[in-house]
Length: 73
Image (tube, rainbow, N blue to C red; front, side, top):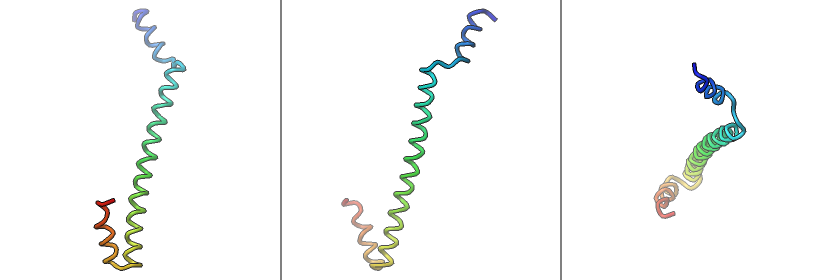
C-alpha cells in the first residue's frame, strides 16, 4: 500500500461534520417519505370507510351517486 492509499482509507473512515450532516439529512428524508406513504394509506382507508358508512346510512344508491361525483371534484 502506498501512502496515498492509506490516506484515502483514513479519510473514508473518519466522518466529517459535513458528511454526518448529509447522512442525517438523507435519513430524515427517508423517514419523511415513509411517513407520507403511511398518510396516503390512511387517507385511502378513510375514504373507503366514508363511502361504506354512506352506503349503510343513505343506501347503496347514494353511495353510487357520491362515487360518480368523484371525477368532478
